Image (cartoon, rainbow, N blue to C red; front, side, top):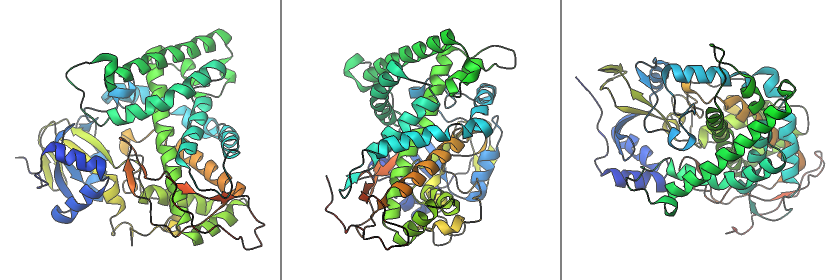
Length: 446
């Protein structure tokens, strides 16, 4: 017998509109009224169960793919059928096995120099003593890193992808959370424009693949495209070109917009916590990294870019904690709600990186990258990227604190970003042993 908790009774479209226009607030209000689990009516998933209890989330993430697997619909609608986001079961495990090696050990360390080079190049254009939104800059920066480290792009292909992908990602992020219309209006509709962009993207990737195969010496390259061209499944076959295009787009999604958004949130948080900013600045101008690593964890806890991660129930009458779930039900683990659980994170609304100093988070409680067998494969890459960018920022600039109110949350479709783009005021640093005279608050730029 199915047992589910109550939840809001407003129509699907009303709940969806609230989720897009008031990111996080709807779930917080539902938790306050119904408790740490409630049902939610979604245009994409229908009736869904939202959970935020740590034990139930752990059980969900540890469930086998025969019990709970990929949600439907999923990001495969915009990333392609060969994407990790689209695959389930054995197909997912097989594809993931090929993608794991580039994100560990020596391979991962090889990308650090690219990250630092691109960061310095982007920061060279930052204005001094002038308020500006950091989000566009972080988007350019993380895109350039991905194009070099993942796509191995240079020359014409680099320029073409750098021009295409920002438009492509922005539109795809919005379409990913909207139902597919029944009528195809071609190029006059958002989905039609997206398909045309996808065709252009596929053509560029094919050129990159052909060029790499023609030039050879793939074993001398460090980029992930070169590694995928050399990788083989257990039966000795190679990945198809279409699957490569889908996976490269998947890795772009994992390491571009979400990472850039987290970095913009880091700027927004640090400006409002001058004591932490001062400690981080001192640490960055030495070889230290402990507090910086803790700060990245705390930014992701307090300002998770993705608010939920989901599974679809594949068996009949699945017992999940207190609930008995029917086949086909979507279960959404709320990242924002579990990160605000005071039993897991004391004083959860306070931004305090020191809570993670000397300790690692429980990956079933701190879940900005999801969890279980479907945890984001690019988590280590994204974490290194954020570490390098934040370290470089703190070494190259004095970041001015502010007493302005917190920037509100703004939904970009998939990601939740600071509404004003992570406003900053920077100047070249003063010597560490002299108190820096930092800028007072400036008027909000539009």
